[in-house]
Length: 364
Image (tube, rainbow, N blue to C red; front, side, top):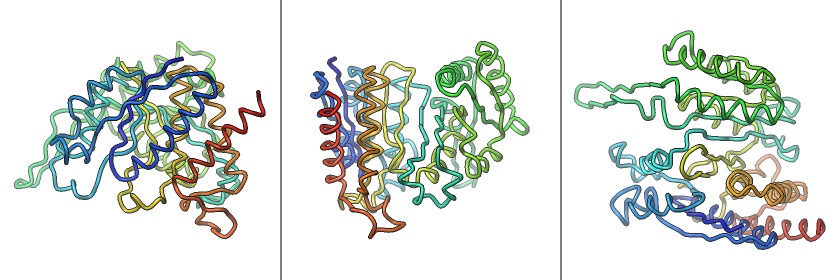
């Protein structure tokens, strides 16, 4: 397998965590006899400073010529005064639109070693394994018209979906559920929003193609509560862009840290991968960032794009083993720092690499 990956490390802690993810990917590929070609380009705030735009043309061209794109994070407080279409986040939105990936897969899981990190009771979170499927190219984030008129004191956005947009992401979610626990929860606000009435009707219609998958519908406000008090009841959850953004960030409470959560965007010309966390400029450059979400994102690249299931499982097993051994980054050790060996970003990456090599050596 020869895999070409474009790395856009971005801003804040993005370069730190991405460096560790790439190092793990290189080691795992070498151990498996595969070749990974890495190219690096700018996106987000660093691109604004050096190129005058959050998404330079050469970055987009390189992305379209790759098998997968690995993104670190974008954003920074110094860019908040810019117009929305000039901010670092605009570069990410433009990249997503250009690559065409419409289904954002965000797993939410509970490691038994980290249940103490969650503010929720252990008996609530332990055993949670949810795959969120967030529609990524429609809804209020992309709908037009949209405007903010500061002088008039008026702002508005348009939330819009077509039947085809809903149907294609629903099929992704149903197929995932079919290969998991055969349960799909669709989240909307159909009691208030017409766009959600379309969403519910289309998901129900597509569900007839998957008679082996149980389908249920939840309102977004109720689902936000259910995720906190009974997360183990859910398997695959599909929802629109804005609701998915909110629910998946909320799910970080279950894992105990957003730094643990990976994501993948599929369905377009090139798959895009990124950890769920943001750029965290307050801790950038201090070695405090948790690289495990980025490393687990690398595992998703191997599983979904490269179809290297064995190598993907090796990364996941290594992360779990490191946690079992009591190693933590600062965000994972807050409950009882004295009980763990607290590592820097770089040292945690090195520990995962060391563990991967040990596991592969034992299995071979």
